[in-house]
Image (spheres, rainbow, N blue to C red):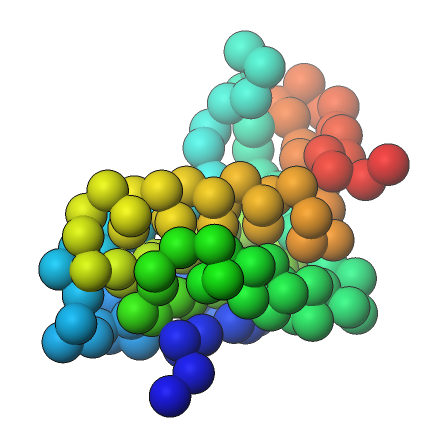
Length: 140
């Protein structure tokens, strides 16, 4: 069975329960989960809303990141879902999880997964601030 249980980018609301269920595995003694939410400030500036955009290759790149993490750690199951489109304060933007035989491995795999996803998957954030200003994050 493939250890990559979920690798999606979607416009609909994300579910922590869905990701946890996806990585459930009887051989996993530890499951680590990271949930990224839209916050109301960035760089000490009030954020009103934001939107995420993804390159057409983003899902393929996400799968490559998941494969790399699965090869680096003793992963029993791994999953990642990122949202695109318009999001409000408090919405879930990304949910990732890694299930491994032991907790230390699960924490390390989950941390590597979210860090590599943020660094490598072509997803860009467009933030709007209360002062009318806006910025793109991740677009080089």
